[in-house]
Length: 406
Image 1 (cartoon, rainbow, N blue to C red):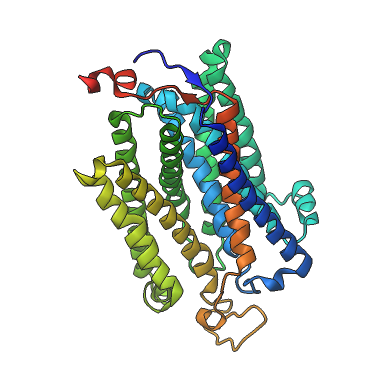
Image 2 (cartoon, one colour; image 1 turned 90 degrees about the horizontal axis):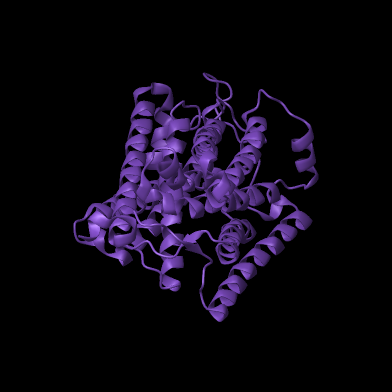
């Protein structure tokens, strides 16, 4: 491998400032939506006593999970010694931080009352996975920041491998903690499953890599930097493998639930009788989010076309949001079974009531807040690559893999 040189993103100033203006506008709209919900109260959202985690949580969880997966590219290079991935590590670390910040911003702004953040920061219940996640999130950003320093400061390059191993282990713990939020909630029929933790880990690999691919292709294309087919082929094949792994875990999860009689009602709700949740599961998550992207990425002709790879990555992101929607909101919409063996007529928390009878309809402010978090993550990423040397000047085949060019 030839020596890799880095420089700032050199997109033309008018186009750059126009891009920042669009993203900043979306962020501002998300901020105004937050102020509106805070001033009017959460009754203006679609959330109820049954659906307490709404659309903002879908975006927040997706971004947090994707942040962990975005670091996977750097880990492959520094932890597992794959030299081809090392030039990609700086952007990988930057996106890991910006995506996590975007997700946490949405999560914090959806608390309802800002003062609740102070309570969360000063009062800890270590029996709660939420308390552990606060340490995991903050620790992740600190470790990745140090990791970036060891990569960008020549005198600290010798520590990059050790810090990279720590970051890799920490990100696995972070995603395990996020998945365990659902795996530990025994009150919800659709959550109480140990497979949730490893399933969220493999989701992070796919969703983080899909966003990374999109940003990498966009920044190199707009700045006319060479991006070789050899590297792109490896990344798209890796994305296809991760999507296939999600498909496997999804099948195992639902087959395991179907094996136990106690879960038959929940499975019937999600897979057949759940209305919008069933449609989102089969059409958006399974078909558009997994089967179609795998077909594109593994196709001998389509898999080599950059436009098709872009479409596949976008579908993986769309499928990821659909997956989190089904897990988070579909799991809440299914009626609580607080007293097994007894019939509950109705209570203020809708236990025993058909989830479709109390259907959740996302409101516009919720959606705008979630999109604002996405825009904030991209805004921070594009500012970072403009100010600092995160991007290689070339990822052409002859630079990244001389054997591939022959």
